[in-house]
Amino acid sequence: MKKPVLKSALLCASVLSLGIFATPGFAADVGACLITKTDTNPFFVKMKEGATAKAKELGVNLKAYAGKIDGDNESQVSAIESCIADGAKGILLVPSDSKAIVDSVKKARAAGILVIALDTPLEPIDAADATFATDNFKAGELIGQWAKTTLGDKAKEAKIAYLDLNPSQPTVDVLRDQGFMSGFGISKIENPTKIQDWGDARNVCHDVTNGNEEGGRAAMENCLQKDPMINVVYTINEPAAAGAYEALKAVGREKDVLLVSVDGGCPGVKNVAEGVIGATSQQYPLKMAAMGIEAIKKFADGGEKPKPSEGKAFFDTGATLVTDKPASGVESIDTKKGKDLCWG
Image (cartoon, rainbow, N blue to C red; front, side, top):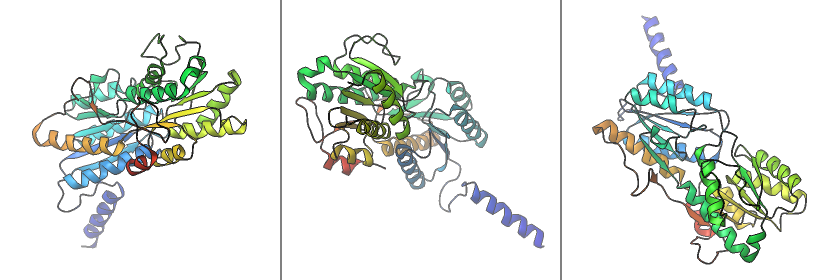
């Protein structure tokens, strides 16, 4: 009689170790997956927090996966395969490579799974059932407008460095980069779907950061070698901005370069308050993920799929400019308010 008891105990322990134990009182038949680029970036940590809390509230059985580094498409493909095998009702996906992952998404949708892209649209955007995201073009545009207005007449002679994400140029990377150009008044954007177009003499450098501090520092060093007189720096996110600042500080340029970014995490807002970053566009990852879980539950219950915001191809979860140096005509909040809304 002891063997069956032992076998049962081992099975229970195995289930617990996989994180798929169903808490009593919650429905275990609605499965969902959250697949992010990494599990270390504060943005994705907050996203997981929002998904987990909403899943617990609604009785959804959530499994979370992440790539090893930003750009790790292979791990995301494997995660989707696992979600299909598990019979998940829905997948929330932040794609590392918004093109390469599409075939895997098609497999999931063919299996009857609702796939929602979070933060980063797929290419094409309708490869997913829905997209919940910041208007990333708008986020870039806000910091571009702020930088242009802050510089005034000097904007006409600016030397701009763009510290982007990675060589695969996922949509979030392109949209923020090109949004900044639009907001800054770069009139010759030769290809709005691709980074590294050189249609304006003010664009002196593009480099990639992998969205982290070390990458931001290295990219800034590379750009300063190309042109030591760079005076405006756009960064894909705030960890990259922190690295760029350190590189500027090392050569005594931290006081005379305008540094702008996107994210609105608590460390980033703190850097705005301390003058490291001039302005940042704040986005809301917890909201994206929580809404995604709600949409999966609704789809599982009645087959209803989420609809995009009016006039857009995705559901816009909002973006707000945070700065303690407001610019005329550019709507913003200060860092005190930004701290109330920040994450990470």
